Length: 516
Ligand SMILES: Cc1ncc(COP(=O)(O)O)c(C=O)c1O
Image (cartoon, rainbow, N blue to C red; front, side, top):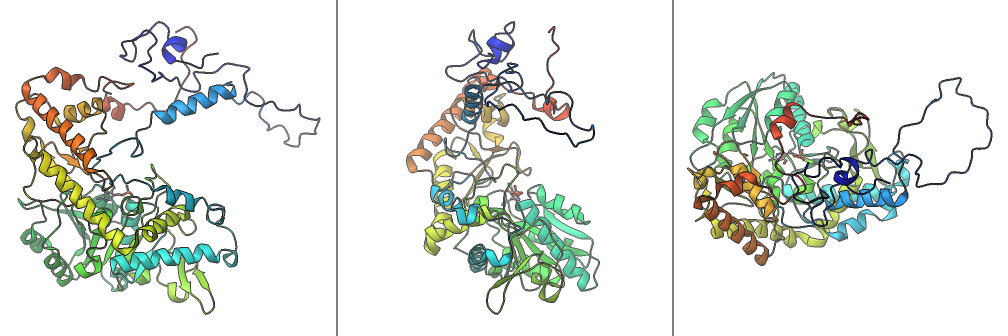
């Protein structure tokens, strides 16, 4: 039975293949886990199936002839394998997760409990609408909260992520322009934007025109004004922006965009810094996506299932994607087709109505916090980032001086002439038991380190983190470069060849040749 370690059972000739300084290849109680296919013990099975009674095959010869190729494993082997894999996962439930721009929020267990209520968890998207009034009421209530918090009259709930929400918003803008008989071709995107912004605009057929920032880390309003023209469809601006700063000229920005006849799209991924404090509609925004996993604590989907609702101004509301929830005479109804009030809808972006499980969690978060609680969440996020900034700004180099919003941006000047790079610094943090911050983003500062301390981190937790960051910065400047270049030293894997992985990805497992 080869259920234990890759080093011992699968590759006895290479005990140090992973860089581990042990005979077994394991490190402490971290097991050097083999792939499940490498653990194959032919003949083992976790289930005893009764012999099939005789039957007449009606597949006409197309039935599988050979074995399906699954590895042979007993139930304990399977349990150990997946338990070990789960323990290799770093998460906000394990420790601080200061990944800037990603807002790794605590997922309250209350949300999880409510999402698992059978009435929500078991609802099937193909059930007749008449059998799911509770689910529709919940969606309606969530939309009401989002409309109240954004000040916008319409919410499209079906998009499955922030980037999907961007697509929804830009398609609505394109449809509105077409309805006006205008063929505008350019979308202005600040240089600090998340990559999904220009990608979305390009996917909608627009040319991207980058807008540089000013020395204060915000959009340069004069340049923006010069770039605006009759061919500009929209500005896509993130606020607070990806440098962790509030765009304090946003009202003038909105006025300039509207004066040019363009739409003001806001990337609302950072809404967690201002929710309950300011309504995007009051800033002149026409359209904004919200990442429920960032502001409203639903789990990050890891590629899905996520949820990125889009708030729309009255000028864009007619183009919201199907289905629409409408208040019928007696009950809530779903408009599923481009007719009646939904005649100008852009069509469907996703099957059914969106991610019900995420809707339940987000609404549970809102209702358990209440309006004042949500406001405090934003205030705590900003407070935590500024507390951390104040603790470490003397040792690291702040990219833009002064207070920040929910995340704080450093550049690599504090590592100048040390031989240590931003990447080395981040890897050394892993050895200290911390997930690194976001690095090399945004691109507008050199060697960026973007730190977002979740608002639920305590003062004690922030103090510990600050102490580690300061000590590492001192160490980097003391000349112990080797320690940084070797990092991470204490993980199951040492530093990976990331360029090789990107250029020559191994996407498929193949068994090693029998004689190797
Ligand atoms: C500023 C910003 N915009 C857009 C996105 C895209 O959101 P999603 O990952 O949900 O597609 C992100 C995600 O990190 C972001 O930080």
